[in-house]
Length: 418
Image 1 (cartoon, rainbow, N blue to C red):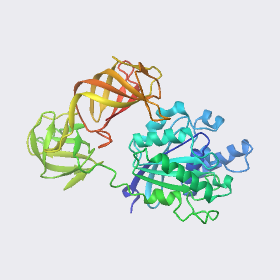
Image 2 (cartoon, rainbow, N blue to C red):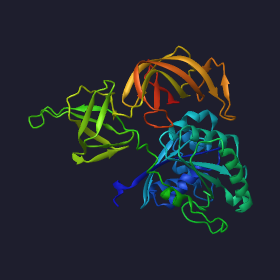
Image 3 (tube, rainbow, N blue to C red):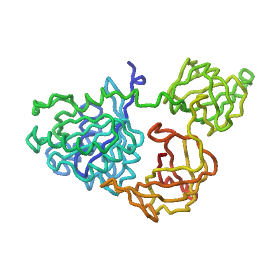
Image 4 (cartoon, one colour):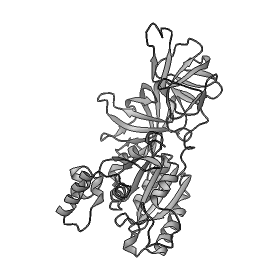
């Protein structure tokens, strides 16, 4: 299988401060031979400068100077690597409560979350918070890594207690698939290679699980959603009548000859052709980026959506959204914002702040006047034109929005339709 044809797994790491997230990713990169020699030389030199008697692999991901000085992660660091089986994009997200927005950013596109727990400390407040955010963002798979097993003498009892505690807590979550692996990121136990120090553990290493977790069914292949990104009109003699509609399929499977409906006009037509990089396809599915042509001449533009005739998304202007607020200025009712949804963009008004969620207890806090930075809460908004959307639970692409400041064009929030 060629590199470009490999399946891509996006995963995020989460855990409390000093649980070893950056060290774990460094170990994955190092043991999977995904580190260039000059990077490794720089990390060795930096480790020696700090007086360590080992290579500090966390320095492979902690790229900011302030991160290296404090030994913590502040921003979201993305790393790319590959094995013979799969390609990976990993988001190393910060553990501090004041960087909740960074974790939401890193987790929003992930197929899988690695949740680290320090074997000495067990489950902490941050474990609950990050697990809740992973559940909130509908990440379908989670691997709970009990790290620093070398500091508890590779104890099976310690591992089993943490597994039992997490399973009891996980009954509140909506994560479909949860697995548990005892590891030592520093020593390399059960990260890429199986550990000889934990013969009692019969499961696969972390890398084995990452390579073999089944993700092909994570996309919604039932509800057909094709937001139009651009209309292609070549304006050449050879193709003077060509009108193609380009974009990324956000759900479902489209086939030539299918009867489809165009939103917002409601016109019905049939798919004439599907093309990918100039090659004709008989069918196309999420998340492929394609060009579609229709049998009828219909006025379609960017922001419109092509769906199945009898399977339409919700259409509306009065919307209920669960939002993560990312701006230093608080969100107040009656605030005017710009909403970006799939390929659509419009002005909206925040009508009401309904409640915010206490991430530690998962309880709702009502009668609020504002949402502060890193708060997660439910709001109602009114858009200037109808949007075509699904609930986030049904489709992560058509069920999400970003909120933009009208004055500065800065992204100030991320929302999910509920």
